[in-house]
Image (cartoon, rainbow, N blue to C red; front, top):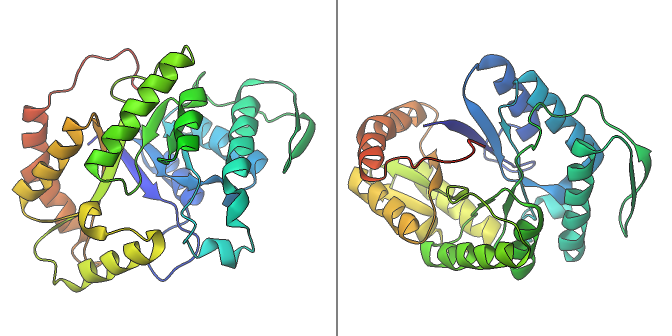
Amino acid sequence: MDSIWQTDRIVGRQPFLETMTTMAALAGRTRRMRFGMNVVSLTFRDPVLLAKQCATIDMLSDGRLLPAFGIGSPLAPEWQALGMDTKTRGRKTDECLDIIRRLWREDSVDFSGAFYQLKGVTITPKPVQPDLPMWIGGSTDAAIRRTARIGTGWQAGGEAPAEAGRVVAAIKAATREAGRSIDEDHYGAGFAFHFGGRDAPAVTRAMDAYAKRTGRDAGHAFAIGDADTILARIAEYVDAGVSKFILRPLGGDDTLLAQTRQLIEQVLPRAEARWPKRPKASDK
């Protein structure tokens, strides 16, 4: 385990903490652990404010932030709650990414887009990391192009292993065409896990909520059973070209720590032995 990730939710009955506030708290409460957002839906945020928040948190943590950005599910309740149109989410996301990336690097940013207008905007201090990581989510053709153009990594959302493999291959081809490269270990996936049965109330609620929010079958997004079940799901993604994982424990408030402990004790040692860490040029 080398990083902590916070799911981005703004409205809903499940008790998710607000992402950027949580990142700031982690910056103050940890010393070595890296942490990130899984993933921030850009169209729900102001890009200038978000760029400033990320830069501040990166400074407070001495360069340990792992920003990850996505487009957001069109079925998410935030669209209605915030009064936003899902039809423009792709174009707004592209503009947001350009603005954030430039504000992290440039002293004065002018930007003229369909949704955002900036003139001579500066944020200070800049991020501690000279090239702040920018992980991108999504599996559409536009998301693939977006990742190939400016991403330093790709984080799957609810994609099944076969779909994740297709996206990884497409991103690699697109980055080659763009004259760029993404580190081999910067392709990630995530799924929820639970040691036990599907009839546990917390599991049932989580699977129902996932299906409602995403419109996808929850089966491939959850690994329910024992250590062998979880390792088998990891293996499917590894075979598809994924090497980083965000694993989310399922359970009641009184069992989440126990679920996490079981993962650490029963799964991680076997995963590390089966898939040793490869030497890499960057640890971002």
